[in-house]
Length: 233
Image (cartoon, rainbow, N blue to C red):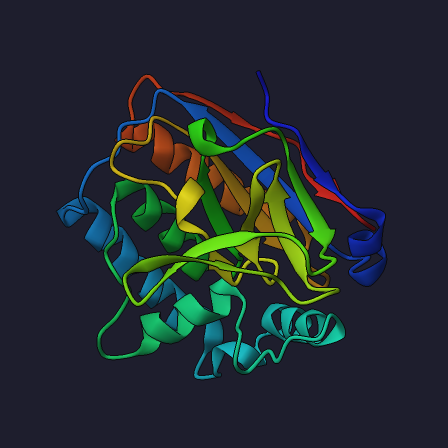
């Protein structure tokens, strides 16, 4: 059954230029990072450098739009960066991008190359549908701090992704919770690419197609479907 993804009217009002494209995949094969996934990450860093042409990631118009949106719901964008900007900074640093596992490496590479926030969730760990909402502050976000499981609550008005069990990602796409993250045991996943104006819808669609091709390459025989873009414009 196809996972339901909904965006609240409050979020659409906050970011009228928001677009997201989802990829649902079943029959995936995950595993540790390898040479092929590392090469993709290195190539993504090179593509990013060409794209920026010497600018800092936050100077890109798409990243500037995310910073403005983060500020609009009360987050400090220089401290809690959207996932694409945070990865871009790491890609340009001497240490480079982290190697996590095959599936995460693939979507991180696409995120960096296109400067688009991309997330991946284990479909078998999601309860009910997923919703992008403005939090009341009562929602539960289960995370790990100091090696122990702990429960946080988002700020009132914060934009979060959640399912029936609680928050899956805080501050829109800033920090994913461990409950639904992709592990080496993951066989079904939902990948979400998110953009704001002024990025053309065609660009986020092209990035989704690139990720779908990579998923098919690394998981031959997987059932992979790219959904049509859903826009708030």
